Amino acid sequence: MNPKPWWAKLGHASLVLLVTVYCVFPIYFMLVQSLKTPREDVFGNPFIVVNPTFENFEELFERQGEVRGFVGSALRRSYPFLDWLVNTLVIFAGSVAATLVASVAAAYALGRLRPPGFRWWRRAIFAAYVIPQTLLFIPLYQVVNTLGLDDSLLALLLIYPTMALPFCVWMLSGYFQHLPREIEEAALIEGASRATAFFRIILPMSRPVVVAAGIFSLGTVASDFMIASMFLLTANNQTVTAGLGTFDVALDELAAVAGVNLLAIPVMTISALFARGYVRGLTAAMVEGA
Amino acid sequence: MAAARSAGRARDIRLAYLLLAPTLLLFGVVIAYPVGWEVWTSLTDLSPLKDGSAEFVGLSNYRRLLVDAEFWRATLVTVVYAVVTSAGKLALGLGFALLLARPFRGRALVFLAIFLPWAYPAGVSVIGWYWTLNPPTITAYAPFMGHLKFYVDSALGGGAWAFTSVMLFNVWRGSSFIAVLLLAGINSIPPELFECALLESKSPWRRFRLVTVPLLKPFLALGVFLSITSAFADLSNVWMLTAGRIVFPLVGTHAYWLAVKVGQYGPASALALTMGPFLLVVLLVLFRLFDRAERSAA
Image (cartoon, rainbow over all chains, first blue to last red; front, side, top):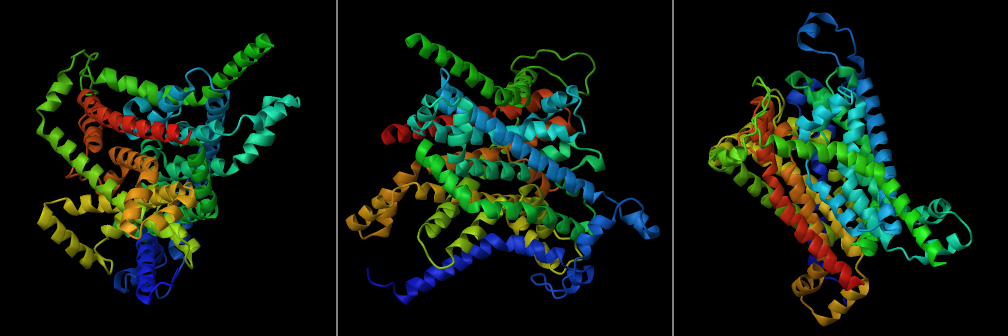
């Protein structure tokens, strides 16, 4: 083919630039905000930061327990940000792990063992995705209370996996279902157990799809705001999301944005590291099991 | 041999149910029981404000909804919200995916940029968006945002700016997810098909319409489905970005308001359940599309 004319190249490049700016700008804006001093927040240019400072981040960790000065006790509340961060990491890791174990088990059952009516099972599980947990909060609250999980992180560990499970089971079972039978059968004839065949052959093969399921569940868990703020009431039990949601004094604006970034950065880094694998996994799931 | 095989089959089926158990247990506790409760409550007059046990009132909660102007308003807003955001997400997502489908310098970085809005945890980015779009009056850009809010609100009615910002946020985050999903879809199509199309037709629009779209149909359907469900369930974003001052109620936020603020569990449950039939139809269409794709692939 003949080379593209200059205007086509220019058009393409500016389109790429536009798309990138559109996607990244809000994130950039929040990052810039969190690095500002209060002075610069008021008088500076909103788009850039001249004297970046980490004091907003430091403040998040310092404002624990006692308040300094009269103005402090009148206007500024303290919050256990470190606790929030630890809670959040525990919940995120726990929910993703629980989702992966449950969805791989269920997907293996539906895709390889194929109990009677497995297609309908698969559909029914996917259909559960339609039901918004946020609308079920009153009965959910009863369930959580009955189980004695009120104001406990375990309540989230119960609810979060169900939000990601339908899609993960659906994707993984589609993939498992279309793997050729011979892959496992050879191992079974050699005398391996089903479990060995699964852990030595099937699971390593499907790593990209499992990674995709993991990233999807991380994204789902990290996007929740309602459930966390509904079920976690005591400050020390809250996650970063629930805790930051209680900031509504204008004075806390910079600290809130800093807190947002502090949680976002690790989550984004993990997602970015696995981004390629995520696409590969989705593709694999679609080729095999759409 | 046949007996041994059927014994093995029976064992496989038992194992299958065992492996399904954790998922089904979670669904039972977190989804099935609450949905059952909502269905039952929608037929009663249960309320924490009322003494005594709840009474069975039949379909009267539903009948009351039919003549409730606020319900129709919420339904209309929900439909507009779902249609506009889904169309926006799909258009942008498809555009991004097609942009990324062909190699160019720096594609890996652009891919990451497109992936980030979804990867950025929405539970907190919505808080960031709130502070960004509704800055405290002392910040440098507050006057500008104030003017913008004023113009939008005076052109479209009070609360319009808050509602627009909810849509903007939803599209920003959703288009990223759809783009990645569709990119995965494009990658799953054998490149020979596109090469063939390139020989058949010179017009990029025809190639797009006659080759790319039909091949991507199941993935587009999946994208639409996920986007519509998220629009219906999109309670937190609306709540956060409007700080609870909801001028344009969605069915979901209206149900939440009825239940939590007004304490009318019965009507709130009925309201929440009215979304069921719509979502079921979307789901059935999706399954049909996927079944066809599966059959033609086999």
